[in-house]
Length: 242
Image 1 (cartoon, rainbow, N blue to C red):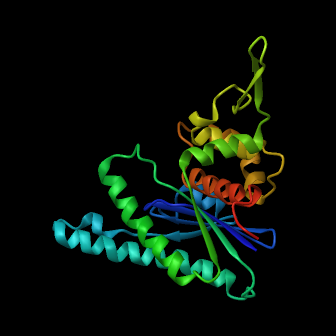
Image 2: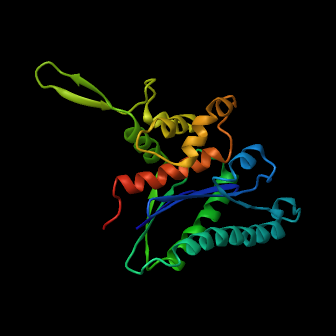
Image 3: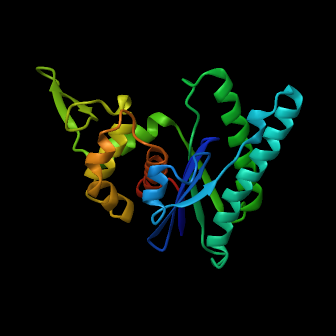
């Protein structure tokens, strides 16, 4: 069985693919190859450089058509990478794909673009891998909550004098609620989770001081780690039917 986690973004889509307990990581990014974080992790992550010329096109109609063509090319790259890896999989085996859903906190313009991009990718996943594939869409809140649940012991609060009511709080070691997790919390959970073992985690642990000096978790690490969590949540929680 193959498990895939997809953190979809038009500028930095990340994919974590697990086959026979082997992990392969991919990133489809508009960042240049000389980006320090790309250069330092290119031995761990398969990078595909994306160039969006539609952003330079001044004519509105031309830019919209060019955007669709370039989204088509990017989603083809993702599909082809999956097909290359599953090419020799027995037809009885299954592919399980988890995709993080939309964050509606995004502003209108970027949200419209990501909806177009994601819809195109979902369509291709369904039509090109359909006989093998089960796809689940995980809400951003689900990804945060399950990440916390899989890493930290819940805090249990007992209320009531006569009838004891058990309240379970999902939070990290600092008492931050899972529903309020941000990229840094997902990163620290990735490092703290005792069941996660992969080369990227080892590298992040070795470079934790450099990473945490940044105001924001550097791209593409944030997206790659999210894709890993999506894959892991799908696998561990058995969202599929065997």
